[in-house]
Structures are given as C-alpha cells and as structure tokens.
Length: 284
Image 1 (cartoon, rainbow, N blue to C red):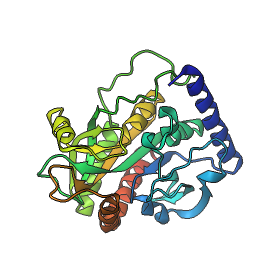
Image 2 (tube, one colour; image 1 turned 90 degrees about the vertical axis):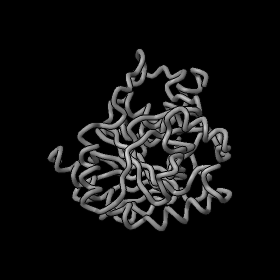
Image 3 (cartoon, one colour; image 1 turned 135 degrees about the horizontal axis):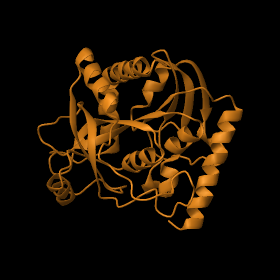
Image 4 (cartoon, rainbow, N blue to C red; image 1 turned 90 degrees about the horizontal axis):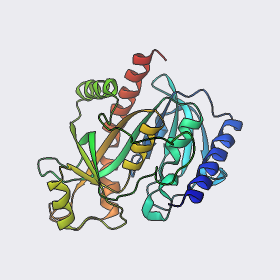
C-alpha cells in the first residue's frame, strides 16, 4: 500500500470515529468484532444504540453475507461495550488499513481492549466443527500487513514484537469461562490466506506444516494493528468446518453460516462470561 493511500485511509477512519463520537458513542472500555455467522452476540447487548456502517462517513462497507454492517453500543455483562457486527475483508478489495477499521476506530475512541472473533476451518483432524479455539499465535500467509506504508504517528515505529499475541490475563479469563460454560476451547495457531477462495488441499497441508491449527481469511491484520496501538487483545475462532482435503465434502459459505448458527447459544454464553470476567479484572 502506498504511503499516500495509507494516510488517506487513516484520515477516513479518524473521520468515522469522530462521527461516532458526535453521535454519542463514548464511554466504552472494550470492543468486540464479530465474524461470519457470529453477529447474533450483538442481540445480547442491553440498551443498544445501533448505527449502520453505511451511514458512517469514511467507514468501509462489507459485501459478505453473514456480516451485518452495523455498530452497536450498549451494555454486555455489566460493561459498556462497542460491538462491530461484521467486518470487511482484504479480498473484498479493501486496503490493509481499512480491514482494521474496527480496531483503529476503537483506539480513536479511547477503548483499551478488543475481543476479535472469526469463523475458521480446522486444519487439525482432531478438532471438529462447533469447537472454539483461543488464538495463541499466527501464521500470516496472506503476506498482508496493515502497518505497511503507514506514516501516522500512532503506528509509526520500529519492529513490533509478537512475544504474546493474547493478553495473558484475558487468556485466563477465557479458559475459566469455557470451563464454567462447558464449551470446548482449544488453544492453537491461526493461519490466514488472502481469499476469497478457500484454501486448496496443498495450501492446507502447507499451513499444517507451518504449525497452523485453523485457517481463516481475516483477523491477523487486526491483531497486528491492535498490538501496535497498545490495545489488549483476545482472539477466538469458531471452527465451522474442516479445511479442504480434511473435509470429505466441498466447502461452502453457507455451511460456515449454518454451523456458526448451530453453536450460537454456547458462543454467546461463553463470550458474555469472558466480558464479565474482564470487567471484574479491571474493576470497570
């Protein structure tokens, strides 16, 4: 991405954040980004104020089914939160910086933490659709980095260390929440390809050789940006399918949505528990 393009995108997102602030979106501590088929968690937000992203100047529009394109402010588990009901993807033609819109806007609005979620395909054959996976590390085979070309002072700097992808105390909170809710929560490595096509069997094998436990087309750029902006991060994947070559059937976007819908109740309960524990942790 050219430096001028990055600067322009940064200013657009700053404008979007200003629009939200003027619309009364302030006072939140934590944001949640909901992936494919997982947007139903936003329905749990109390006293919700909702705005369509199409109404926000400078905000990128999503064209992917299962991503609502709404931002919700309200209370979840006793904490005032900002929920991005859907995300945009690199394969939709958005720049790497725009892909990180929820994270960047969260930072502009003064939030301290972000919980990222996505739908992913299981690369390990001992994982199964419907399981959840806590992201400990990443393998970025999309080779897309949102910091490339960015000249804004907020993200300018030297090499960024990834000794810890997830905020350790949030990991503890998630493991405790999974135990209390009776959900299967693996810990693993998330791999990413650019999409929009699903990975080929050979690419899945390459991801496996690289150490990835699940494959996605999103989220890793958001982790990179959140780390650069100093936000505390926790990332959870909903494993909605077995990756190509492991699954006996051809993969479809519809299958991803169906499985995400099937696990919606336990996903909602788990995430609400995690948010509650984070609120208690910080005494917010």
